[in-house]
Length: 440
Image (cartoon, rainbow, N blue to C red):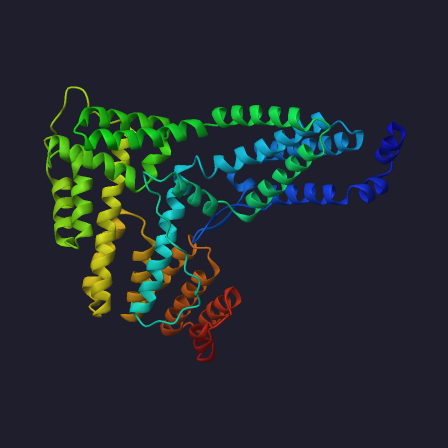
């Protein structure tokens, strides 16, 4: 048997003949490493090489190749226990990389959820203006809630690109194959469980789980009137899992705790007050509260022990405030857009852009500039948007609008190029670009 195994090692053709699926799995894992690692609805796809520096990416690639090669060698040599450990190393490496850029990345999670919602709202902008567009697939807006751990998993899977998912699936299959073909299945399984538990604790997943438990415990304490204990639980949860500060629910939960404990005039309570006015549709009250925050010296009631939030929590509350006020300006702007009151709509969308880099406001302004014949502003803004949006169907819409502005400005050749670019990006039912191209 040893001699046979050595011959297989010396003859690549024999190795391929005896282990074809193993070679395919290794190639798929490596393909996943070089493929799309992070995917956003509007910003587009990003590979692992763009996320890391070239040196780190090269080191990761060679480490993975080494582990895959070692897996093949231990398979041929029939070292089943070592193969199990190597497969665990491959799986843990892939999982760590995937979670580092999704599960543990508040910026990426926040960007994904915001772009998912913006995609739907941008479609609404086109619908209000009776503009046929090339984009038909509407992303489902995922809620990153403070209380549901499964929402965290759903957003994580949404953020991950096809390369990361392919690498995870194939590395998991290699691990299962190693376990099933092990000469000591029970012993190998026990070692695998121990290693995965160490990975669970060492990677930080255990802290995240504990943070969610503390949030729920804090909510129970809060409903029972133990406000101080509840707020302490929330602060501990934020320290265990800083990604919670990028969610929609957790900063509002913290703000509500300050609202009920220290009163509506506490600085940290204003996010909750704005959210209530926003939900009720009282947008004028939202604007008034925001103006009061910006222009007044607020007197914060200071508690001796529990009214001191950490800087990330304060930033999270302020980020939610700005996002809510920006969304309120967008809602009112859409109402003016529906009634074709262009000046008022433009004013509100510009106000939204002062608070956040709202793609919805920019798309709406692009429509307004095109309709009101502000072609120079239309061309400038379309170039700015195209630098940030890499979704094919949505980019096709922007190129079409740019073509219409160029055509009306007296640049037929540039307009024709823009329409052709739009059709190249998305030629399915792209009626507006086809119509524009036929008119140039």
